[in-house]
Image (cartoon, rainbow, N blue to C red; front, top):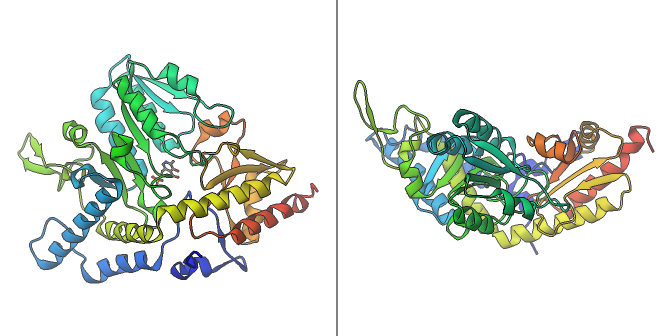
Length: 405
Ligand SMILES: Cc1ncc(COP(=O)(O)O)c(C=O)c1O
């Protein structure tokens, strides 16, 4: 019997439009347990000071909290603390790699290979870096089941490819890419692999050494932490060879009038005052997730996904995307025939069901699927089958309300 997680998440016991809330927009952001909220309040209430800069007790405490969070993240990913860069979010982490590694290492004639299923955060920076360097941006498209095309991987990952940038889990289709195999293929041709872990790190165990990922990015807010704290993992030798991304205070060793030497890792990539409260929250979130356990998280999300897909398939007017492959977790994209996804989401909102509708910051993928937008329900371990039933019950009302039934 699973713990009743709702006791730890007061917001999930609140109401939306007069109904108990069924929060199914976890791919956008997750809710925060009380322990995370307490850790942030504890930091601001008891230890707030600028880290690294002061010699007085409060500043030392803030530094300790920040660096302990880094050690915890490193341990969580099986990395070393020097390889963990704190950023604002996955977007900033991916931009850091694109601008620091990409701009430095790409030349005209090189190729960047990404997939059509990327979030704009792992797409737009590569477009810009391709333009700036003369490199070519290539795409891996999808097979019929929504997974990456094996032919495209075989044909497009070549000696010309210098960077393979790929999401571990698609934020639209919920399909899990085999990063270990892709990393091995990328390394065979001499490319580095940049993994967008925004939808994977919160939901499945991620071991960067086992995957042999060169870079991996994620956001704290999608895994119970506050907004404004994110992580970039990078292999030490790669990070050491890269120039800083942002410049200013804290990332320097010596500054002279015309020249600067930079701090060691990880400070070289952490310019300016950092988000210590966010790091405290992320640290508490990792403790909470460890307490739940990824076995439990995967089991609950797997059950909810299977249940939701089966129930949605019973509705003849619902079209599903990427729901026939077994390697799927936590995310279900669909449309209700003849109804715009925004109308669906608005009708569901009136029933207390929170889903996302739109292009999910993945416009090329949505276009590739032949759609303008989709509805997306996304689960976390605190969701229940009752939430899914509420989703289905609300969808069953949609066509009637739109006078289509
Ligand atoms: C796969 C993926 N990558 C990157 C991001 C960007 O995350 P953030 O907005 O926290 O930077 C998201 C957010 O939805 C995502 O789903």
